[in-house]
Length: 509
Image 1 (cartoon, rainbow, N blue to C red):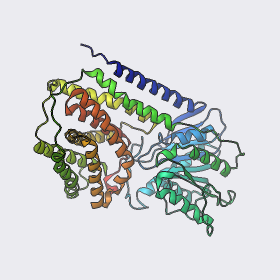
Image 2 (cartoon, one colour; image 1 turned 45 degrees about the horizontal axis):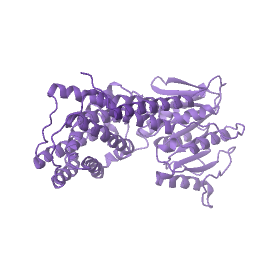
Image 3 (tube, rainbow, N blue to C red; image 1 turned 45 degrees about the vertical axis):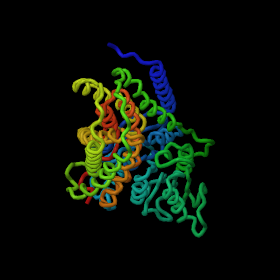
């Protein structure tokens, strides 16, 4: 018997589809007149080339992403450069995006992973010289800021460097040439670092924002800009970032001064697209089956959750510290999978022991429950994954990443089953998520090799927090914890397994 949508669900569905259509239309409009081309540099480095249609060869800007980023994340900057007559060549570092190789080398040594990242950048620079008129510049975000600074030190023909969210001890008062540093207002220490770097050139005078020191012709130009009301990712889409970058590169290449540079407005439309795809899950879930009615029962007391929550927070960091660090071939991410699984099992198991079994629902049998779990996983995950992969960051499905998705799914399934136990208490699921983040922070304190896991929090936290929403809708629709946990786990494994960096075990000494 077909399932009919209630009027509210139908309106929700139509609204989500309209928002998706609007976002896609606006994103497509921002790329009009610009031609994109996928390349393979040096036979192994995936890259995207962006330039105005019919434009003659000119300066080429190599665009490098940060830790856990990809060429897709940097596309707004690449399009802005192209629309202003510059050629942009963006690429994926090893372990990131669509690059097939894991990031190898000691993460804590300049001659380790950093040297490999510099080598990849130099290979792309060589391709950039061939594709343009020989003039080149470097642009990098976060981790790539240090990489491009070190690259420019050994590539003297680099005309300018634009470092966004920079932290690099390699910067001096005169190197690299013609340095623009941009940071977001909400980036804290990185905004202070932008001022410090420019202060090397302004000394003995204190540095001022949006003031250019030095001379482009001598390679000594320096400037610091803080983009208002944005953080570590939002700074990439901020209009001031795009304007300042184009103006800086125009000056460095000696191009004629222009009025207001052409910019692209993609950030709000990407946010709308992804949010609409998340919201689309609710009416799609309603199409899978009629809502199950659960027997009315009193909510458990908060006291029954405190002991399981405390144990799930404190025990995994201690237990996992005793295990060998290379049980699985995914440095950092194997710990994340194991930690989430152990946290969830402790929370679910101890919660059942303290609170008793979950009240029985009038749901379907095991086979129907399995199919509903798979259906929920698909409708919650697929639309969002397609949107993210197309417009926010790459989610490749290479063999190592498929295996990583499986590993993360197993850990996330146990984790969200534990959160389903916590969700019996009002606001229990968000509280359990905060407890899990505290538990991971304790693991990082016990083992300094996991410090880079903290750097991934900018991706992990939003994904886990967003997963709580479709988990709640699924729980309310089916009245059973398994479909809710399966949907949330599939959502988490797809987004994290596709976007987080693949790091070789040898990178953690």
